[in-house]
Length: 227
Image (cartoon, rainbow, N blue to C red):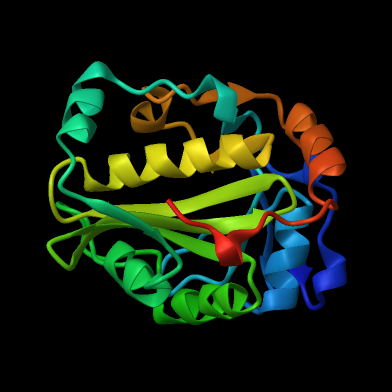
């Protein structure tokens, strides 16, 4: 039976997560900063659709990108060389989340609900959630957001209004994380899109070891970051 959470101290060990669906660990609880921070520190993230209770996940294996293993496709390198864009950090966090919440082609809705936007905006205000933005001609055309704890970045979602806009923002993010000594980017689930950039699956146990050594360290200087 799936555990129903009543306190952020009640998260079960991740090795108790279900195999099918892969990684489903618990339900219930609240989308508040204390819940979210505790979850991410323990290798857990929320993911649920409208009409469902809050569902908490920790899949095995885990899709990650080690920053030093970044692979930039040659076609994207050519696009980036042309320029014509500006990458910013944390200048439009709410706008990035709102853009990410728009339904994708062929989808009726999005898992990024207003409740989710409010919760991650509170993390942003605490300095724990960040947006990386691609601006062209004064317009926000792409970007992504995620959570950063210590030397771990947990990617959440991205969007693009023009071709390659989110990919360019992602590459700039990874290069900045390389400079700051980040050890891993959590991609959560396996996608071909992220695999093209060098992301790969590792056992959840290995991911948990990485968290153990890299979450409780001083945070990177996001507040003064420039791209």
